[in-house]
Amino acid sequence: MSSGLKTRAVLFDLDGTLIDSAPDLGAAADKMRTDRGLASYPLERYRPMAGAGARGMLGVAFGITPESPEFDELREEFFVTYERRMLLNTQVFDGVHALIEALREQGLPWGVVTNKSMRFTDPLTRAMPLFETAGAVISGDTTPFAKPHPEPLHEAARRLGVPSDACMYVGDDERDIIAGRAAGMRTVAATYGYMGSQADSALWEADASISSPLELLKLLNSA
Image (cartoon, helix red, strand yellow):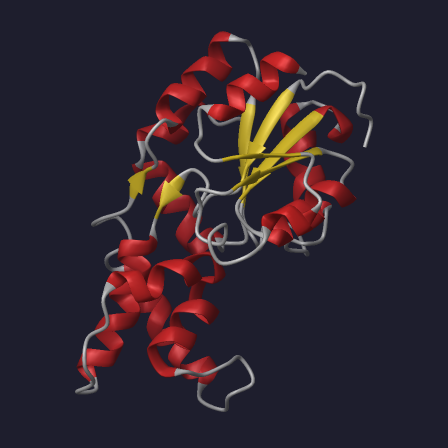
C-alpha cells in the first residue's frame, strides 16, 4: 500500500458496513425453521453471522455447514425466501447518509464491493436512495472472483477511474481487510458491523478502525 498517497476514492462493503440487513436475513432463515415446526430464534442469535450470508444464516438455523449434504438445497430455499423479503426491515446504519453526503461535498467518488450476488445486490441498491450516487457497485459475481481476492476491488477502482492504491476500503469482516490489503488499498475495519463484536479485529491488520460510520471522516481529514 502506498501510505503517502492521498485517498481519492472510498469503497465500502455492503452488509454490516453501509446497511443493516440482519433483520431480513435472519427472518428468512427463521421462517425456514418455523416452516419445519422448529422453535423460532431471536434476531440476536442470527445477527453476529449476518455477514456470512446463507452460510452463516443456515449455520445458525440448522447447525449445518457447506459440506453438509443438504446444504445446497437449503441454500436455494434460503435465497428464495430472502429474495421475497429483503427490503422489509433492512436499514442504512445511522450516520451513513451523512457520511456519503460529506464524501460528495469533498469530491470523493465512492462505491460498493460486496460478496452478495447480483441477484440480490442489484434490486436492493436500486431500491435504496443511498446508492443513487455510488460510482460503482461490484457484487460477488461481477468478476470471476469474490473477496478475499482483490480483483473485485480492482474492478471498482477501474470503474471509478482511480488507481487502486489511491482508494480506501471499509469493511466489517476480515475478508474485506485481506482483499483491501491485497489490492494495495488503505483498509479500515468497521467494528460496528456484524463481525466486529465476534472477532478480534485488531488481528486483521487494518490500517485503522472505526466504531461508527462518521469516524471515517476524521481518518480522511487527518490523512
